[in-house]
Length: 319
Image (cartoon, rainbow, N blue to C red; front, side):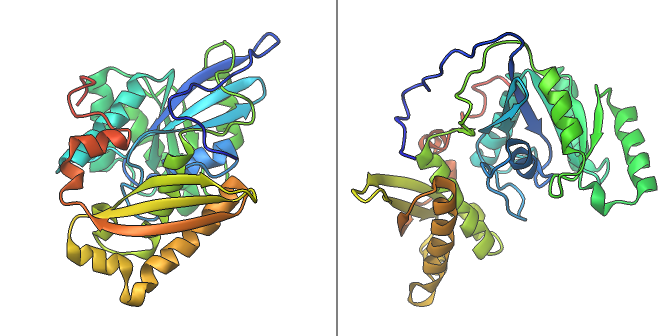
């Protein structure tokens, strides 16, 4: 799998036959509700990074699922939460922008938490924007049946959801029913992507995300949120392998020392784990080289956020 030109639209052959459907489905919800896990389950392979930490998804990522004659472009949006910095504001605005542009909006909520403050924040946003939405209660395997039924009633009494689904994205419980619904909910029309494409993002970006996932998994507390990863070089090798050079940016010198670890052991472990994920995703040998640099206040730099695929707050007219 070689890296495509970021500026070139996919060459999509016209899909033959009648009855095909294609549309965008935006998944919105509070951080850590399971949006990325659900996208991976619907696509059938890993296209979105998943960690136990909240706010893992930073920019909308599109996963592409084929269900019968329907092609569903799933938009994995950042979690909606109370913002504190420019990066936070851009992430939340990206979530609402993705929802406004979609054919179908799905609100995924953690069934264990019920109608808490974060869920209410999303519902208030739906009311403010006038969007219609369907409800997906996730992680039902961790909730008693009577509590789940009460939670379902509470959500639907608070907002007029079109349909309600109960699933466990991790265990794939209820996924087939949701797939069938989404396949019929998207509008009729030709497919927008080749049938073997599973994500709409440059490989440079996907590679950086897989490395960032390992930073979230290996490091603790606030450090992952103070870091970002950029793919600086992608070099095809004559033996079919690829060399990928990436930079991990942090905000302070002290953070750089933590990422590197004693004798460079931490960054070595991060690189080894990221390389395994990259080789599995690309189905080829990968030579990964990681460098750690300090870039102060990168999360407040509009240019950096644009490079991550985030618009500046106020540009879409949503809040």
